[in-house]
Image (tube, rainbow, N blue to C red; front, side, top):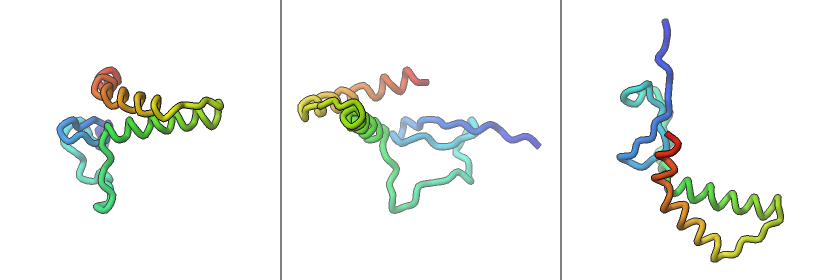
Amino acid sequence: MTQAPVFARFDSTVGRLPRLTAGGPPLSGAPRAPAEEPAMKVHDFAYQVAMRTIELMEQNQHYKVSEEHRKEIGKQILEEVTSILKKSS
């Protein structure tokens, strides 16, 4: 018996991280986040990745990024999330 391949697909209607699907509706046995931990929205995730990248650059490469530049970069990432998602698919 062969199983259908499982793909991660972005559900843009709810703006959440990908769910496991088999080319159709969500799998009934797909793992779900516990009720007390709400799923992180894509924009929140992108912002956290950008801020963590800046932290790593400061720690590992000894860069210093001002608070003003952090805010500017965070704002720009949030504005570009939709276009970044389109490029990745």
